[in-house]
Image (cartoon, chains in turn yellow, cyan):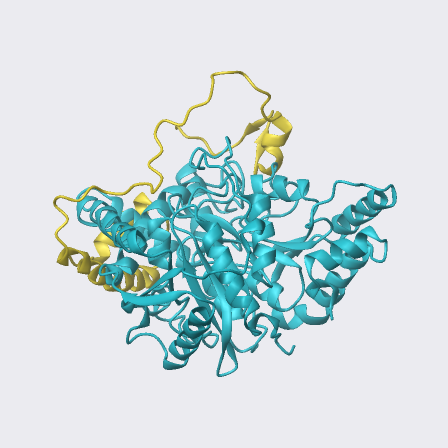
Length: 95
Length: 486
């Protein structure tokens, strides 16, 4: 499975990353090298093997639905790049 | 002997008899930092004002005859900069978080505060814990105290270097594919990765959620046992933390390992491992035999697939975990963003270093439509096979032993151009992470003037056996007493 520069552009968009032409070329090369190495895994027959998502196999860890003290608006806004009236300010989403 | 190299019991005694004050411990830490930091550069942020204030407060408690004091009371500690500390800058060595001051404490910090340690500062690391040399820090390079032209390892490079250099009494690091154990090995200190789920991940900035664990880096095994005792335990704030009884780790340090059955995987002593490293491991095995343990060669047949498996899984999980860095609620927002999409793209592109971008790209690709089955799902299945290899061995053996890393530390800049070579340094630590089992690296001598680490691996939640064996080995040798000449 060869990775093309088009693939890299598509993936970069999914990952919300802006890459320079130089970065695109370098990543295409490096991703190909890494994925070629990863093709090794195809040597193994895993048809009957269950995937391991988590080693502890915990299921449905819940807590009681009780209201507890949470953060203040001040705390929440503490690291906000741009704030207005206790809200995070961003450029307009809709025209 | 530096105050910070004295035993826990000695310090405790001297504090009780008022022969020593917490202020003096903190003084020693900052004195040593001013002496060696220009060369080692282990810290990103120093917490001097608060640390001294805390020391003063704790000395008042001592004067008032405060009776309930654990052995960690007053100790100067370094915290890896991906563990959130309320009110103290936490950057993960990334430019994206260069202005981030957390509004809460990680659970391990809450526990250390209960144990009354003193936070000296935040340790340098590979950005977002992605790396094995500390060369991926977006701030500056940490140097190996044993030879300043060499890397300290990573990603907990700052933590390992600071303990080796005597700047702190102990440090906390994090381990996803070897990031505590490998730098511990390179820097000649003890590094422990607990069983997955033993230590809360609440407040550990997530890299790969099914692999990340916080653990101690210390000057000897006893210290590691005390720190683990303080930080282990179920946490309702971490839904992946295990509900298990915490044994008396310190009490397990009996020195007696007679009859312990040790397995040495032939895949861990193969062609890729330096001859000089193998020699140290063989010498260590002789010591373990002298102590009454027996060892045999075994096979972990899926070892050769571990690195590929890890990089697919860890990068996939990372691509998901790092999608929170959007420049909206915290972190550095790009100044030149004209619309919302640009806020995301430019903030991330400007804020992340190349290794972080590479792993996000790899992970996003592996999870994307059309490739999920071939890469991510496949890797999860191979992960099962790797875990089963360990389960089989632990049916007949109590411990697995081998080198922590295939080589000693490498020179700065030697591997930056080839990510794949860098990834292969972790071949001995990665399988353990995939299986979620505990492992410790202890110093076992020098090769070419640089430390070699012995890795001991145990069954899930059997840190007691791990610590007992590591401690017995350590006490029968002098390797842990060696110090770098800075």
